[in-house]
Amino acid sequence: MRFRAVKGMNDILPDEMERWHRLEGAFRRAVGLHGYQEARVPVVEPTGLFVRSIGETTDVVDKEMYTFERHSESLTLRPEGTAGTVRAYVEHAIHAREPVTRWYYIGPMFRAERPQRGRYRQFYQAGCELFGDPGPTADAEMIDMLHGLFRGLGIPELCVAINSMGGPETRTRYQAELLEYFRARASSLSEHARGRLEANPLRILDSKDPRDIQASEEAPRLVDYLTHEDRDHWDNLLQALGSLGVPYQVDPRLVRGLDYYTRTLFEVRSDFGQVGSQNALGGGGRYDGLVAELGGPSVPAIGFALGLERILLALPEKRPDPEPFCFLAPVGPAAQKTALRLAREIRRLGQRAELDGRGRSLKAMLRRADALGARLVAVIGDAELDRDVVAIKDLALHAQQEVPTANVPAHVVQKLSLARAESRPPPPPPSGELG
Ligand code: HAM
Image (cartoon, rainbow, N blue to C red; front, side, top):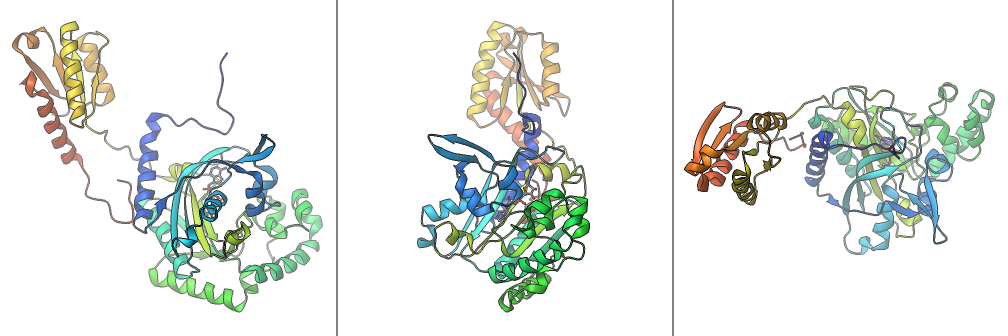
């Protein structure tokens, strides 16, 4: 019996892992410089948490959740990270410990979407949530951090789209206008949009159906309905972004697919690489009402999440040199015992050592060392055993040297450190370039 992975859920194998680690490392470095600390929350939460925060009439809750029942409780695999993070913030009364909290997370999310390139049913997000700062300085700084991270990664054709949702008052007024606008055009909407028109007309604005896109072409614009305070926030955000020199585009259609947003909304897009139509690499916004909605005090918040698979599709391919390491090639059982001890010693000194203990010919072992990208090969044959030495080959320099067996670990460590120092690029800029 053979099994296959669930459709839309991918294996990430070791040869791809290098790029993942470098991307995650760049993210951790960039957000660490802003004081974000990692939080890990469960991948399963009570279904009601997502319904309440993301909104019943969103695509995510309406169509895409993996929900199941256990011990008479309805549970859901998290479709995103904000709801669980806010739940944890409230549950542990973090607001009582500190006025401002900066958390980040990296992990898998689950949405039962139709899979295609850049859209999966299990995918990874790296996200940040900032609690306790009403902005707009915090908003500008977060967007700048994101922009710096993407620039540092070397992703071309970047576009930072922004919009403002306003607060609850703006939303109520705007929704009423939008409802009227779409009611007059109901016959040209998709069936799905028509079905949700009365409940949540905002969601029609982020529909991908060409009929809905066309019908919303002349829809009223959110920014025209902002209250005084909302407009102030928006104007100050634009000024702060201007003074930081962050290039942005105001996108009046940007409403984002989740209901918890208030005021600032943003999305980073790139059409470079293999991203195809899934060109939103990350997005986020302010959600000033959510902490209170989930039973906490009234604490303003803002955050974003990046789609790691999509960023990897957009990243120019750069294969880094493998980390130098030592391969041990013993010929015969006696040599294998010496090699076992030496490999353990080399690892104790903090260097990678791989031992070929399968008893194969020297030629086969050298081929294997080459295929693995080893820098050094320690050859131990009868001739070496007799004289208590090991032949150390440097595959990059095509050089060979005999070293007394007792000195091999120290010698290997020194050679590998030298090789690493020679190939090390200059230190990354603070924005978090791939290192
Ligand atoms: P989101 O826009 O739903 O926002 O997702 C963020 C990013 O996750 C997207 O821009 C995209 O790159 C990636 N993504 C979403 N769905 C998929 C999928 N099916 N396959 C691959 N990648 C995907 C949120 O999730 C919010 N929680 C962001 C946020 C944090 N807002 C405030 N704080």
